[in-house]
Image 1 (tube, rainbow, N blue to C red):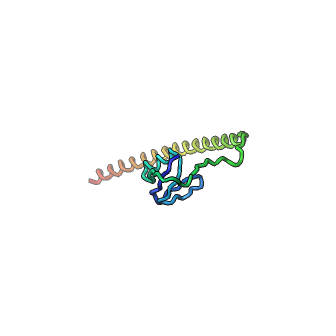
Image 2: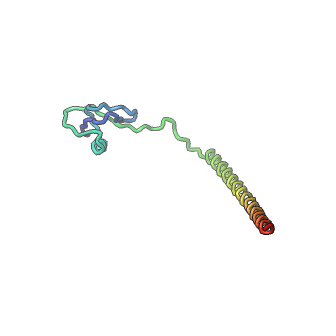
Image 3: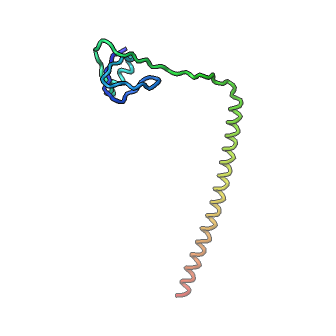
Length: 122
């Protein structure tokens, strides 16, 4: 454990995000102290006492269900639906490409006819 004096006004610590006051001395784990000192948020101090901070890891309160068959069936249904939608989108893309090609061909023929008509008028 290391004693550090907090320099930053917006430093939070712990599972409850306790706000640490600038100028106060705290007793924290060595690895945390190194990170804070390296980032300029705290400085090492030799004061005799500091408030001890403990960092906790929260655990889930409800047990995780081991029955995955329901979730797997929902996932399978969703994947099937995604595949169907992708196939539908692909067929629509092909239809749009064919329609665009037909319109382009019609426009090219119209431009050629117009050019021929202009030449004929001259």
